[in-house]
View (cartoon, rainbow, N blue to C red):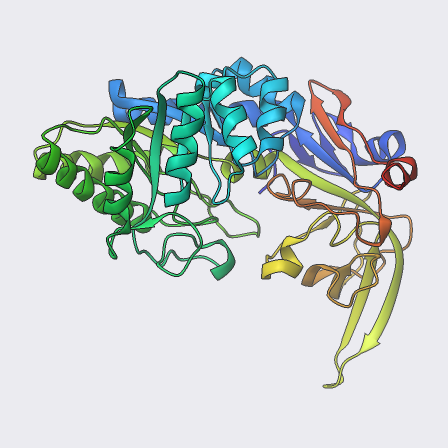
Length: 435
């Protein structure tokens, strides 16, 4: 839930820097990111992949959609892992950060012709094809540049992953990929084979996000491998790669347990090995796409309390509303699909009794809620600091300028030093787009 260098004492500190010092130097709200913890988590997934699959370990593609900026792209380059991008903007950031294009993978259900052409031109290693329209588009771009583009087909294996509907992506009624059950996956296989400028390397599936059990991943692997066997039987050649996606869940609340890299990948390796043996297939290269599980716990959001208000509910119960200087503009997940978070008083300790509270933002929306229900100290007052852990994934990434609120900065902390890696927006930034 918290990064490895966060200490909770008289006040919260990260890498020996107190929350009050961070707030004074950088202002609030702010995303506080543990650089060392990011590097450790990324390395753990990469090491676990290689330990589980040995020579058949493919790439760890960090899922840029969780959070990316140029400095984080530089860390990824340093670590030697790959990156998964799904728009031209994410591709531009990855290239600016110096990541080897051969270690990049381009996703997206509606890639523009311009995005495809730029990816091919940049030498992106793999393009994940998501629709029949894209087959021709990628083939045309590759042919025009005189290259053979490596591609994967994104498949929907027909799995109802145990997560929220908005972030489940592998059942039939979704916008992503080709259905195995309906036969559109096989139509896509045949479509790719018609173009000499495309090299089909294998299949890809991403079953959803924030999944806290391995069973869904295992079933997905079984169905992908069955299609690999069909391809071998039809064309007398084996496809050499499988990308099993990401979606590995993290802990947001006390008592939750994240999926650990080593146990998760051991479980996947057992299924992949057994299914390949059953189908008499050679073990393909296995790649994965962790994003949230790397960056999520590395970051917390630091807020300042602006007002508090007590209300009496219809049943006679009381609730304390605690308004902070951010809200749905820096954490949309609570409003978007009911995500749950916790928070703690960050600038001091308190022995005051805890009361039923709701942490809300400053936006002109009733649904502007950071934490719907939490017991917090009854003496929390304007000027206090609250810290919400595990906001690294999709906090800053989904941030908006609703109500013309400038987006918060990202502050990287390491070895007792803090620095801005993504600056706070200003009113000048907001006005700069007006003609």
